[in-house]
Amino acid sequence: MWQIHQLLAEGKPVNCFQLGRHLEVDRRTILRAMDFMRDQLNLPIGYDGSKKTYFYSAPVSQFPTLTISPGEMLALTAAQNTLAQYGGAPLARNLEGALGKISQLTGSSILGAKSNTTIRVVGAGKEDLKHFELLDAAIKQRQPVQFVYRRLGEAEETKETRTVEPHHVACTKGRWYLAAQDLKRQAMRTFSLSRMEALVVLKGRFERQADFDPDTYFASGFGFLKGQGDYQVVIEFDRWGADLLQANTWHPSQKIKQLPEGRVQMNLQLDSLEEITNWLMSWGEHATVAAPEELRQRLLKIAKTLVDRYGAK
Figure (cartoon, rainbow, N blue to C red):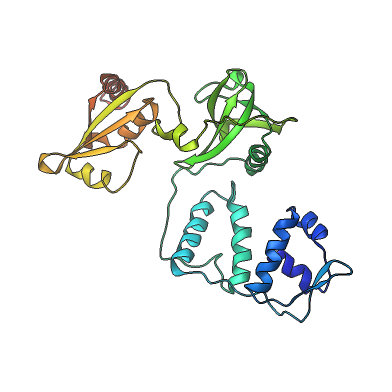
């Protein structure tokens, strides 16, 4: 609507075809916008039936301001502060453009505004913004994509070309991932955007997996690394750890049980142990794994390696 207003304010009569081509939307969207601008925003929109064009029948000095509640302003500022930590990379510049337009409509500056709330992202990803744009378009148009990919922890010479049908892009812990149907492996796989190179959108269209649901797909992992296992994870936290643990929701399957002396027990149902292992290391002596034994052995192996690395020589 802001772009329609700008065109009309310049005194240029426009029709639905011109607006639709300029804004890349269909005729019905333009008509709904015109109705809203005329009936809800009380803008003097006129219509010339002989030329089938819209125009402002009276001067309009500025577009009506939007009303944003304090809570909505807080959410916008928090989003700005969060993405600003990505160093202007993925999505940050796009968000700045959107907030700039909102500032014009509201008459107040969101960009650069001082906030009483700070959100700190540790290890923000440096993914290529172009990857987001290409993947977003491919997902919407249901077009396959191809890229060169390196698996986590593997050498550069192991890179391989992957052809996939993209379904969903998601972020966790400052890192962005693509869920896609791998055509060679005939299975849904998860790819890190930061390890993609030479991403291109291919011709043709694909049928989206009818049973794919991102919430269900990512639910069984502790992050976005998918596995084929089935693990009942039981972890006990001391009083110090319990205070921090209960302040967050860590996983959809989590169940918290209160124990004596302020301790708590967390139960999780996971399909892999890679990410929960790294997460547990960050709790140090405040977390103790009760099950499964495989997870205990993983942590023991890491502990022995650390002792060898940092122990007395």
